[in-house]
View 1 (cartoon, rainbow, N blue to C red):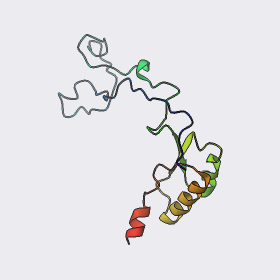
View 2: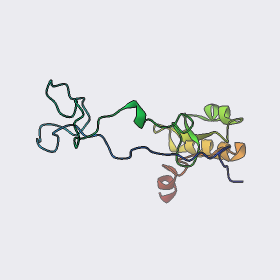
View 3: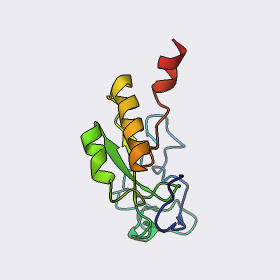
View 4: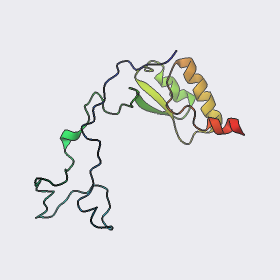
Length: 134
């Protein structure tokens, strides 16, 4: 049986465009990652019309949709089968994600146990495909 989220909440993004640093398009030495302008005459800091937008609290995600994956689940990182057992009663809220440093053999054990517990795994196919090819 396919696992579905308990209540699918529509994720509304108020802004999908990244906030870029002022004058990063003008100078190569100025990187694109956001830095707050602090100059006394800076037009971005003073919020002049037509300038780039600064990050504000209003752009934040709604609290009921914060941290949700597009599938409607919240992410829970799992390193072994014992940690997967924690999701037994929460399998409609959380989806397991196998940690990056887990071996291929343990991944197979985790995915088998997840099917028994009816827990969704976001990266179930990772590192398993390469082991089958060899």
